[in-house]
Amino acid sequence: MTTSIDLPYFDVLLEGLRQGHPDLSVGFGRHVHWGYWDDAHRPDGSMVDFAAAAERLCRRVCDAGSARDGQSILDVGCGLGGTVASLNERLSDVKLAGLNIDARQIERARREVHARPGNEIVFHEGDACKMPFPDASFDVVLAVECAFHFPSRARFFAEARRVLRPGGVLSLCDFLPSKLAVPILRAQDLVFGGYVRNVVGPTDVSIPLDRYLGLAREAGLTPAIEEDITRNTLPTYPILQKIALEMGVHGLTAKWGVGAMGLVSRLALLRYLILTFKKPAA
Image (tube, rainbow, N blue to C red; front, side, top):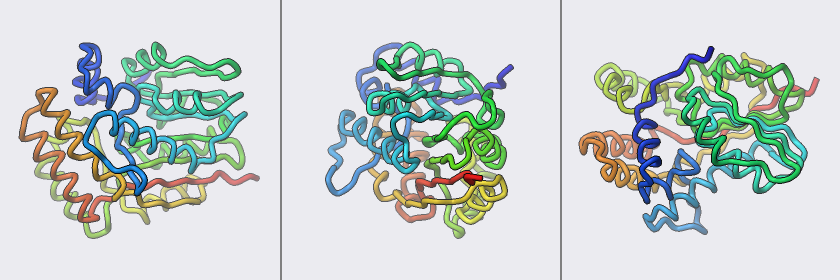
C-alpha cells in the first residue's frame, strides 16, 4: 500500500485543470516545474513562453542523463507525465516508466500520455524511497524538481542505485542552499515552516551541495555533472506569482512566499542545480 503525502498546491492545480483554466492549462498542463531561459530565449511573461521554458528544462535534465533511443528510463516524481511525454516524442524503441506517490497525478498521466509506435509507457503509483521495481531495471533514472518532497534523499539515492543497471545514470534537478544560507533556512523553518508546509506540503531545501554529493557517494553513486542554472530559472518567479493570484491564492502567499524564494535565489543563497550521478559499471 502506498503512503500518500499532502501537496496542497496540487489540489489547486488539479482543480484548475479540471475547470479548464486557460493560463493554467497552457503553463502547467504538461510540466509542473520551473522554466529554463538562455541567451537565445528571452522571457516575455506569457504562459506559452513559460511552457516552452519548462520543456527546455526537462530536456536539459534528460540530456544530462544521456537519455537516448533503445533505453529503459524511469521518471521519478513524474507529475502529470510531461517528462515521459517529452521522451516519448523524441526517442524511439524506449521503455518509459513514470512513478508518483499521488494517485491523482498518475490518473491524469495515464489519461493524457500514450506511447508512440515502438515505445512502451507505464505509470506506477509508488514511493520514490521504496520503488516498486526489481533491481537493475533501468538505464536512466530521472527526478525533475521533486526530490525536495521526498522524506529522505539518502533513501532515494539508495533506491535509484538499486534500480539502475551497472553503468546507469541518475539525472536530477533540485534546490540546494549555499553554506551561508543553511542556518538562515533553518531559522526560517522554525518560524515559517508550518506555513510553508500548509501551502506546498513536505519540503526540504536545507541540504548544501557537499552534503548532497556525500549522500550520493554513500549510496554508491559517483557524481558526474554539476550545472548551476539558477540564473536561467529566475523568470519563473513572476509567472508563479501571476498564476497564484489568478487562482485565488492568498495575496500574502503569492507575493511573500514566491517573492522571498525568488529573492534568495537572486542572492545565490538558494541555487537551482542539475546534477548527474553514475552507478559503477562493475
